[in-house]
Image (cartoon, helix red, strand yellow):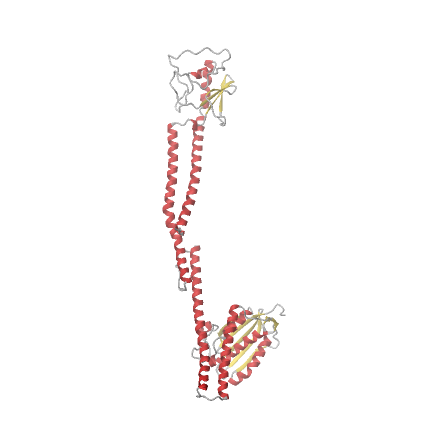
Length: 481
């Protein structure tokens, strides 16, 4: 069975915490042992001076270390004297060895077997040559030795082993209780982690699960799906970005569907007109006359223009629209476009005014044919929508590294809502306007694509003359003087 992300995260938190607790437990275990025995050793080392003095007195009385055979030192915390008092029936001391007071090979590790056993003794007593005469210590362990001095001469040394070699019951019980408390504390922490990590893992994974389900819905085409934003951390930011992505996809899907519907609607009208007229000719309802042929030709041109506009937009969206740019004067292209439309404006009774200084010279890196297409679209737009006996003013001037071109006409104007959508595809300010006079609503969309391809800006505003103001800014070339 595949383990879910909740359980993976739970076990990950648990394992990481368990390893940290184990490491901490081992360090504390080692530190308790080391610190506790160091503390005991420090306390007991302070009594060595008294023990050395007592041993010196015994040595001075006996003349050698043979007394350790029947009266070894015994270490208890409350003893003022580490040697037991001699008993009345104790056997007499053996005579001193003629070889010297310190020579006694049987002294050191052996005790009189007739005496009762004694607890382990931590003392180590060395003679003046630092050879053991009582007790022993591991060769790899260093101990502090206190010299035994009699009348200014050192006769031996006394040391005490580490308390870890002879733990007393009370000390051992205390150390065991501390270790038990440490282990119980570590187990308690592990238990708390187990109780807290699983709900925490579920809480962390919950928004991820929600986004996974929402992603599945988006993949299935449900672009209205959103995920709740419940935090301000990285997961919250991810949820906000996901909602933004879903909103963008929903918008694009609506635009795509609207795009398909609009194309179908725009193509259906000229095709229906052509079909009706051709069928009328075939059925003999209408005669083949030059007027009929001109009507069919006009519908064919309108259909061709619509298809060409759609083709231009599709190429622009794909980034495949060809531009042959060179350094040129856009004002010259603007004047040529104005002259080509002047007769049309005169025929409709619209005054065409130029506010272009003849001294205005600009150099832009642009495509001449695309600029002519841009200006033609704007002139055609004003020609179609401006009322008769109106006016169109065209202005061009250089401002801040741009050649600014304005097209402003007289009524009718455009509402603020219409200004925001004026460059959308197939958008018409008046939905009831006929396609013959209003076109398909693609001219301004193509104009925006052309301006953006030249790294310029285009915007729509209310005109001071009461109609529409189109403002265009095209950056100047580096060669412009």
